[in-house]
Length: 112
Image (cartoon, rainbow, N blue to C red; front, top):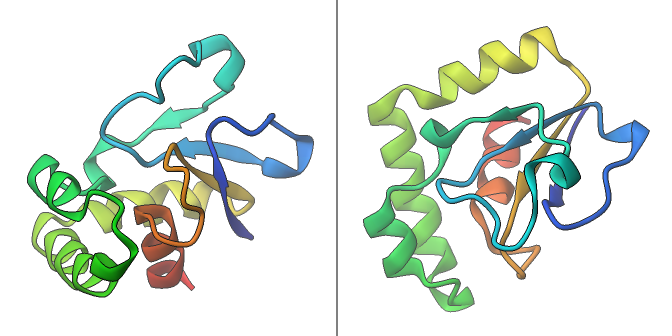
């Protein structure tokens, strides 16, 4: 089962394998406290796309479209699928405040 969760939320047993899917490390959180098993920067949106999106909810549909195109071109989604085949219980971690409009939401949708 694949879940998504903010990187700032406490780690729980039910999280399974914890994968950070952001290009930047979450601000103000130590690696020990984060309890991240894998930081998979390759599946994060490009810096240009992330900056363009700016977490503006109205841009989310276009962000989703562009992000999916980036993933298709890079093959990074295949890397994530491989990791998930080895760890079926996993949580995709993100740092964004908006829990409905972020790259982890798009990734979970693609993996479902």
